[in-house]
Image (cartoon, rainbow, N blue to C red):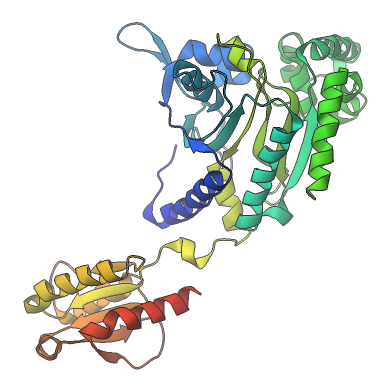
Length: 420
């Protein structure tokens, strides 16, 4: 787990602000759920034999002896809240969330035990059109962040539960014939979750996995038609994709469409967004049958990707525009009032007022260390004349003496020109 320091939080705010604005444009409403839930919620939704439930969840008993768990993902909590508050009763819902998740897994580059996700869930819509819209929304996010050339969309279909069960039998029979080639992890999954073996990253197993039966060849007719409808919509929208027959996702509740956006910009291929359809989950948790589709993306991984590719815009760095500097203690009150006036007249101005006194030399040093581009100096002469001195801290330019009445207009022009 790690701290998010002031030098990093501005980039997070840029990313989160971009996501929030995009969700609103697509008509998704934000939902906020607790970070602690009943353990049974995740065991029932994610699956008792998944790695998350078996090895990764932070689970504890409270003082009443109830088993509670820090949420390891957002979908189950979102479904629980929607059911509990009647949001799914004969109506479609488009919801999104962001927040901290927790998994006790091996930390690696861009992954932490407390991590943060953005996700969305659409309920009550069963056609391939909503699957396509969810993917189009994610593609638009990549475009707005400058990432679209650095990510690849991978698609697969898991079919219906019945078709997948029949395929599972064929897959287990194939793996039994090649049991000597399975690693320890795959042998453990053979009886509990054999589809996850297809997602193994063990290079020694790659040739054997390449020849395994393909789920796509065993789809039921309705799932095949759904998948063809999705790919047709994506092609019409100009979204490139790759069909990955080994893409199965790690959670038990998925069916039909599954997808991942992957990148090689962080070294080995990594997933930056993953999702799919989970039509049976609401019923599994005690509700009425409800079609649903969604995705989640890890914020830490995406922040790392933006930094690695140098795609962080200057506006996202949240640097100060102006440092207001009373040149002596006698000017402090007037400087404070002027700073408040500028904040009212220029709401977008990033302004910091010098506090703490000190010699004039030390005050100038603090102005420089603030990172601001401009310093506004107020001393005895300026106060007497109703003026202020504007000093350029980051470029070789003559300082300006300005009427305090003209400050807002001049600052607005200077700051907007710099940000452009």
